[in-house]
Length: 609
Ligand code: M6R
Image 1: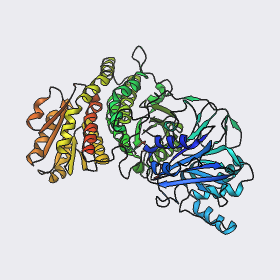
Image 2: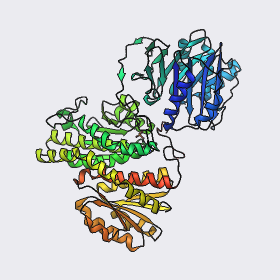
Image 3: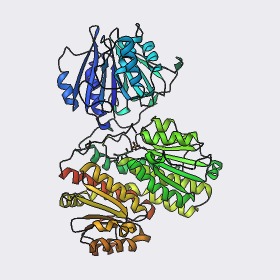
């Protein structure tokens, strides 16, 4: 969704802002713009399409200042045009703003400003009202004007504002939309997300809801909603400097697939004590709390939901607690049975997905204990949860989620094992066996990645197919959904996932010689049943790519191609099985010439309903 970057210092602000906006590209955008205070006026440049179009417009040395704000816009209210792009100005062009979020009462404010003050609006956006409101209240003090303006607004926002009369300052404010301040030496940043500033700073402030921030080159002052100064702890980002760069890879997605052994290891090892007990020390679930839980809801969207499908089976098996799983957009509107014995687990890479956040709030209001599994530190979902289990995946830039998914799976195993061992529903032997299996995963994922040339060849052979089905049983059925989503979202091939046993109840009617079926058969106890399902689709002429553990060669008789993953416990097979599917989707999309990191119609973080 939209991205905000502001810089205040002594250098060329436009260069820093453009660099930051490029690092937020992964959020998705359709236009971009920048505003600088120059010689007592605010100058704005905007362009539709890629950031390079904006760069071309701001190349002139006259368009330069040591302070500025920039924005990438993902159209919600009004088409992706230059007029609708941010920054927006007030009528006198003395104030400029960039905004991420939605102002719910903008129509009301628009009417009021038009009738009372004769203000003429230029754009169709909800955001433009913010610039006019701040302009209206401005009396030489931008902080005061921003505070008065937000008092008139309802909705979600992260806003950064500059004023021609205070050219050394940025004022920013947030409510339900992410915002961080980057702390430099003689310069400071404001941004929607950490990757935007990672090249320049390591120390950041995570801005909380309803806080206002004033940035000058030497100082960042945070105020709470009552105007009191806030003493915020510095958050030190410990990602590697190149964490948000593409390095030598052609695409972020491929880089992130290759990072999986390292991030799985990091997510796992950060939670293990030397004696192999699981350390959830920052998660305040006591034995008493765990014994009190009689029901768990896992709620998420997209890939995170697919991690939850595996999580449900794993937690039920290990902790013997019934787990319901739902996509957040459905959960919100159905009757659920939540009380103070309910544990609500929200899974989200970005921590900003609106449906997941809204479902979380609803469950919290009704008394549930909230545990979130989140990648983005300080995000809304993390902040509004009672406990947070961070996936240490580092920044995930490609729209198609890969390393976030596998680290979410690691969290599911750790939660299951922790609850199971605390409740006594698993014994020491099983616990030790599972930990051994988990610890072996990074090396095994590496082995799967080494098989990349074989999977690439399959992708080259089958990339022209119009219809691909993913089938599996048990944990494999959860992974099938993820394999199918990966393929459709980046290659635009129609694909469909279904529990293999369900095929004969209707879907098998679609099978013919034009169909490609990816059949997952990694679950030992379901292997034979799965092979029977493969025979059924093979009999209808479908082409089969089988996926099984090494040594399980029976599948070769019924499949046209077979991808093998290393031997492992059934429980952890999803972590290994998904990797070839990610690689397959990547190379199919590459063959088709698709925009892999930024697929059409998709944004990295979905902050609208
Ligand atoms: O940031 P979140 O994990 O909450 O995002 C949820 C989905 O929007 C996300 O997983 C989406 O489905 C990805 N494009 C999948 O690759």
